Image 1 (cartoon, one colour):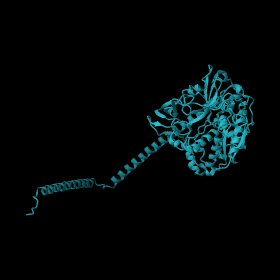
Image 2 (tube, rainbow, N blue to C red; image 1 turned 45 degrees about the vertical axis):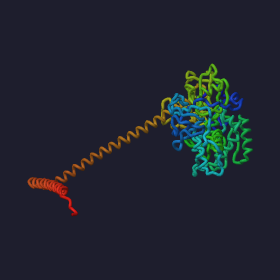
Image 3 (cartoon, rainbow, N blue to C red; image 1 turned 60 degrees about the vertical axis):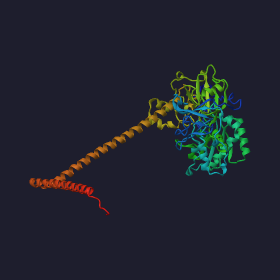
Image 4 (spheres, one colour; image 1 turned 135 degrees about the vertical axis):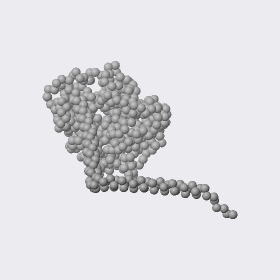
Length: 544
């Protein structure tokens, strides 16, 4: 979901951010950053999806009717790529049922429903600092996993997985991403201003877990307050392993691949990971949550969310408990304006439009944007492609969006793969610069989904084909075995005497032998029964 042309401040900046393409967008964060982070009261009811992260959904460890305390684990990580869920406050689990989750189609997912008791009583297991410097890194990583920490930049990938460095991959640098390039998101900006020390301490914990000695905190140049706060916190920590580096304010500078290229000049391989070239990338919010979990024993039960857009009466950043319904969060920020038309979660450029606001805040909810109609494009705005090439110049992944668009329209699978469709990061730069207002990003998302569906159907067809082939092999083998048995019977008959009378005599002899054996068995059984009867009627011997 990309916003309209007013956000575009200048022409595409090919290479301005030290990576190919990108655009310079006019930020719309002044209102939301004009006041400190507000803390929203705990609502009466919280809705906690079991899947708030990338990977497998969490596995429930409490039941309906149980009373839980703040910070108590209510669902455990189910698999390596998964994350635990904790109670954001004390209260009673009233249901485990399907509820709407943040999804453009309004889909539902299994959710715990927690009725708050108003006490906000803490669990004993959710308190107490720990000395990580004198603790085995693997154990510290397990603390992060048990705390349910995930990437708070929007992707929601379990943090403990990224902190599992393979010995043969030579991780060299921890990169803390503070580059918020979306024109509306500023929750990390405010977090770095107000909790810079926690971000620094989280970075030091991650360095200890990874056993490396280089951490770069990247912040965009248009965030002077955050840069100053982080530099002061690094200086106070007196740790030469940490460095603060400003980066150009070019969208999508916040993409980890683009950020790595800006800082190092090295490009993450196609279909590769930052780990492939020695980087591990975490969001600054993830670092602060890591510090809270390790130093204060606090699992991830709340996060800072930017609530903004010209459809919100009082834009601001809010510290909110996970599971809080979005409509209550909007109400806390003054409610909608009269002309609010579209609600987007995740930022105006890469976020998704929601059909309604009856969904909860989850771990990956970094921003909620309400826009009025003048900030939106509609399907009727799209016009035919004029082959201007602006989309290719703006693409930070060095793709050819116009080619991908044509191939997606005709669903040419091989051509889409040849043009590296899955390297598209869905940043929306091509949408912003397209003079024909073609919804390119939406087209690419649909094309990816269709290719994945094709792959799934092809895999199912392969399974069916293998089962059919196996059945055919079984039937063929059964025919071979039956033929072998027939041949064996023929051979046995061939071994019998050719004289028919002799064959009859042998058959009669076999029958007589069977009858004789049967008669002998019957006589033996009768003899045994008689002996047993006689034994039972014989008088017992007397001692006198």
